[in-house]
Length: 132
Image: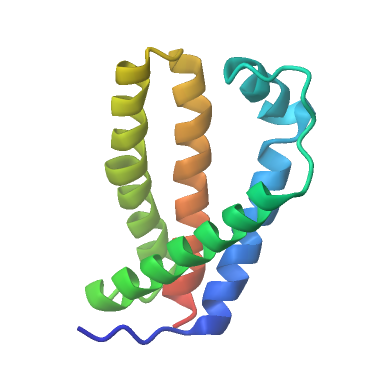
C-alpha cells in the first residue's frame, strides 16, 4: 500500500477543518447549546492543551483521508465529498450513535456532533482528494 500523500493538502485540510470547527462552535452557532449539552454551560472555550490535541487529531484525520483517497482513486472534488460523506456517516455517525445510546446522552448532542463530524470529513476529503 502506498502511503505517500500531498502534505501541503493535508496541512490545508487541517487548517480548513479547524476554521470550520471554530465557526461551528461559536456560541451564536452551536457552541452555547453544545456546551450546555455536555454539562459545561458557563465555561468558555480557551486555547490550551485541548486545542493542540484537536489540531494533531485533525492532521491525523486529514492524512488518513488522503491515504484513503489515494487508495480508492478519489481524485476530484466530488470524489472527495462522497468519500467524506461515507466516512462521516459510516465511521463518525455510527460511533457517535453508539456512544449516544451507551452514555444515554441526548440525541440533540448526537445531532450537533454528527453534523460537525460529517461536514468536517467532507471538507477535508474534498481538499485532499482534489489536490493530490
